[in-house]
Length: 87
Picture 1 (cartoon, rainbow, N blue to C red):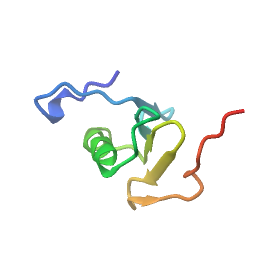
Picture 2 (picture 1 turned 90 degrees about the vertical axis):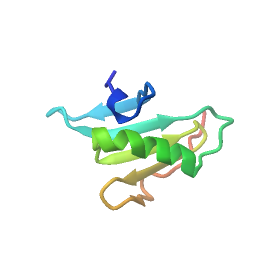
Picture 3 (picture 1 turned 180 degrees about the vertical axis):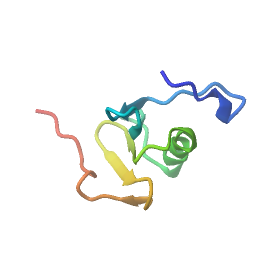
Picture 4 (picture 1 turned 180 degrees about the horizontal axis):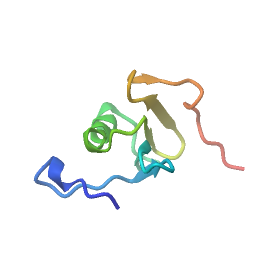
């Protein structure tokens, strides 16, 4: 667990952070419950964590939906934006 407490007075933690072999963050994921709509509030929360982590990609998900973006361009990548289907 990465300590994100120095961002605000509140205790914070990210849901998922993936690192490469050089220990650099490549993906930060903010997970919401399936019944929670993905919104700018969820993205804002991920962006707060991103200020410290500085991952290459940012993703928010509520299980049925995934929204991912490149943190440098702040644009969604259509190749990584997809719904999850259950078999």
